[in-house]
Image 1 (cartoon, rainbow, N blue to C red):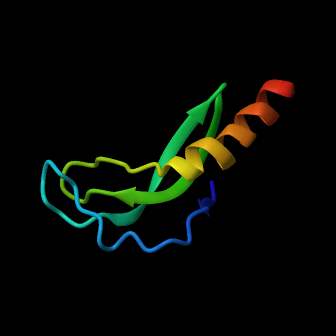
Image 2: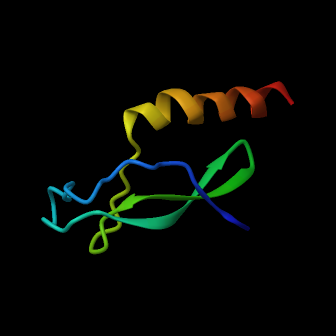
Image 3: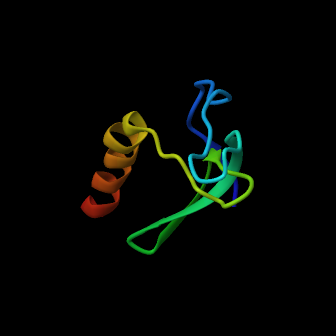
Length: 71
């Protein structure tokens, strides 16, 4: 499975509020309607918290959901 790179913004100034660690891009497996996607997202290297920016959730992810539901 190829890992998709969908974000091009700089998240190096973002930190995990729980661990105080800087977020780094890491592959994350997303599942929706039995479809799996590996996506590179900002993640806390310590606790594994994943940041899904609002723009990604409301635009690209919503578009993929609609496409999968129409199948």
